[in-house]
Length: 253
Image 1 (cartoon, rainbow, N blue to C red):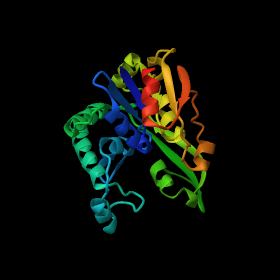
Image 2: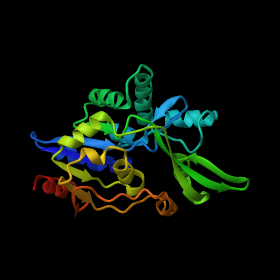
Image 3: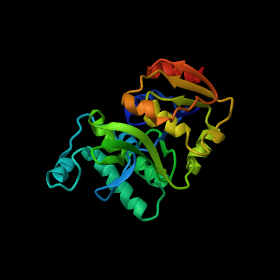
Image 4: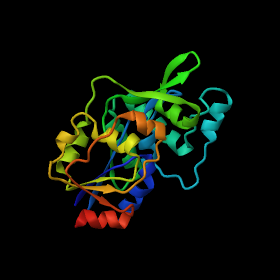
């Protein structure tokens, strides 16, 4: 069975647990958002892809803390050392002409991931937050806002993008999948942005079974309120418990 799940960093453990339970007849593909991506300290940072590429049992932050100590990186940016490994590989591949999809697949293969990992798009589509400051409104990257949302008065969110669309390989995978799972990830920062990717819903069969894993959106309340990114579930959607075995059983039903 071809199973596709939409998930972000907050669903990484669920995805890896799901992959561990698959039978030899199952194929798992994970579609990941890119709205938190950015270039920072010379590296292509993709927080959701980074989290799916490597789940740290005991994360360390030696490189990030070293960069912060000398003022080379903002204090709110503190990726793990495993994340930075992924960013270094990705950046080199992108600079040689690889697409984000190709760079992701190349690293996933080296890491021996038991699933196919795909970004929702190969294009730039970053979410920025417009916050109130003493001298007026200012737009900051969504990751900076998320580092301390209680310290900011959020006014609106803006998607910074040129012409963009669903990645070709992602569209092909969605067109051939047997079941789509909307994983236990934030609706505001993961599920809805992926579903709103231009061309993505058009790749799905209108009658495809869609399993919506029950999950409380842990995005900041102000962000949920002003984001305006809500998107109805596609296909024939039904809820399933936030349990890996239950989701897999429902997918096979």
